[in-house]
Structures are given as structure tokens and as C-alpha cells.
Length: 215
Ligand SMILES: *Cc1c(COP(=O)(O)O)cnc(C)c1O
Image (spheres, rainbow, N blue to C red):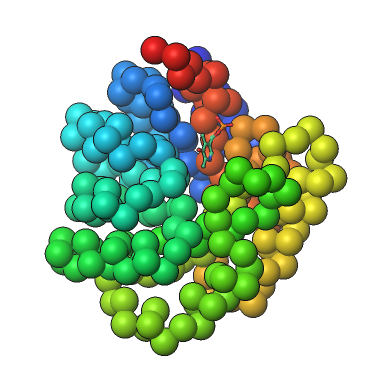
């Protein structure tokens, strides 16, 4: 089931678009099924769950942290995380830099932008992101590398609204052509996302089935 879904999605998307399989709440068994079909990029949004899975699963998996990251937890994922998607403050960047330095590595990050018309989503405004990217303080953080932007559209059936939100992100990103990763699009909206210039989609339920949070 997992393998068929993966192959189906991969056959539908352009080769240049990276598929991150969002495995949060799903057992390692299912992740291995996807791994055995060739999938290497996986996304998790809880630190403890990510650390547990990374310990159990093959070492060549590229682990993406896609949740809201608290500064005091950066140290747990710093040794191995491949890309941190949800960076939404300069202080968090500073902490990631500090922990990456301790691990003697450079950690790739995406700035999370707020594009939805909802109160609940995390992220930076376009102005805040610009301020961070143009700050002198950023130049001193040698152990992080900002690779692009991540965002989530509103949770709505209104596709013209979703398209508008994605367009605003794409438009903003054009000012920073060297930041080439655009992480947007999930199970419900990845086709629209790719149409609007996404280079990295994060798909969970469409691969692994609906999540059960109650256990
Ligand atoms: C859970 C999650 C996804 C995947 O959601 P699906 O609707 O299951 O595809 C993508 N991005 C983030 C940030 C998530 O937390």
C-alpha cells in the first residue's frame, strides 16, 4: 500500500521536486516499507519521535524536521538532522548555529513564512524574513546555511485562496534567487503547490494513510 502510493505520487510529480514522506505518528515498520521502495527523505514534527526513529532506522535516511522547534530541543537533533524546515526566529537560528558548531557541522535551514489567513499558523512575515536575511548578525552564523523557505497554506477547500497564498510566497522568494528550496504543498494541495513553483512537497496521509492521534 505504502509502496504503491509512493510510486504513484513519484510518477505524477516532476523529477526536480523533492518528495518528503511525512511519517509522523507512523511506526518504523511503515517507514521501512517506504525506504525499501527507495524513499530516503522523511519528515517528522516531534523531536523525541524523530530521535527514536533515527536511532532505529537506516543511517542514510535524510531526516527533515518540519514541526515547530523549541530552542531547548535543538541539541537532540543537531547531530543528524538533514534539513530544519520551520525556522521562525533569529534566536532559533542562533541556537541551531551553536549546536551545529558543537557537532562540527553545518545545518541546513528553511525560514518558515506565514502565508495563511489563519491565526494558528507559525511563521515569519515577509518583512521579518527580509530583516533576518539582510542582517549583519546572520553573517556570523557559520554553522547554519539558509537554503530557502517553507510555508503552509490555509486549511481550506478554496483553491483560489490556496493558489494566491502560494503565489505570494513564490513572488517573495524571487528576491532571493540563491535560496532555491521552496517547501510547500501537502497531501491536499501538492498539485497546486507544484504548479505554483514548489520544489519540495511534504506528504503524509496520502502515502501512509490518515493519522490516528488518540493512542
Ligand atoms: C503533517 C504535516 C504535513 C503532512 O500533512 P498531510 O496532510 O498528511 O500530507 C506537512 N507539513 C507539515 C508541517 C506537517 O506538520
